[in-house]
Amino acid sequence: GGFIKYIFDLLNSRRKEKKINKLKVEKQIRDRPEFKITKMEDYFDYPGEKIDLNNESDLEIFTAKIEDIQINNDIVTAGYDESNLDKDKWVYRKYELENIGRTVIYETAIISNFKRTTCIFDIRSIEEFIRVGGLNYSDISDKRIAPGEKIEIKIFYHTDRITTGWGSAIFEIGFRDDNRNFWMQPFFAPEDKLYKARRVTYKEYLENIRPDTAIECFKKPYLW
Image (tube, rainbow, N blue to C red):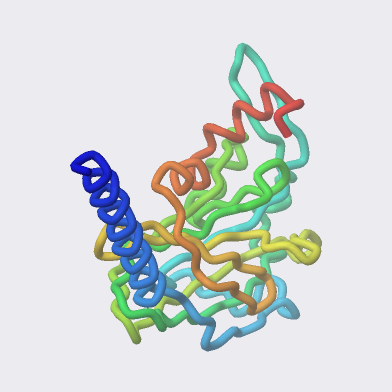
């Protein structure tokens, strides 16, 4: 009888723990931070015009296509078209995003999903990356964004090389909340379309923002 009671109590305890964990996850999802695009301004018809680099947004990135990959002595370098540096050919779209969730957002990052073909650079470091063939897949803002507050993002392109995801999200917007939970939202730029935020592990978040995994895949093409 004592053994049966022990088993019953153990099962009951596990059920309670499972229920508590489920309620915690449901609360995290209910209270999650999340962005909504509240405005988009389109400057695709004005190459080289209306570009004011002195009027900075919170994130300003340039999207560059990887033209080729070279591997020498285990070092991976990318080839880019140097015409990407011609600011007279730059166009962009500007997005205003509001935190419509219930918790504060920190460390907002734009992340490239198409790591085999597409890198992103802060527009003030693009020349260095293009010249040396560096790989970079994310850019981060350290602005604290409380519920109801907004962040401004500009995404620049060469007017002849505007990359899209062809129905897939070419970017993710990643961020963390007050409890150090990490979240990501598929971002379908250059369109003004975002999917809902989903929670990811810290490991998954790091794998997405760092170039390490992509570099190993370039070294071993079968991994793609």
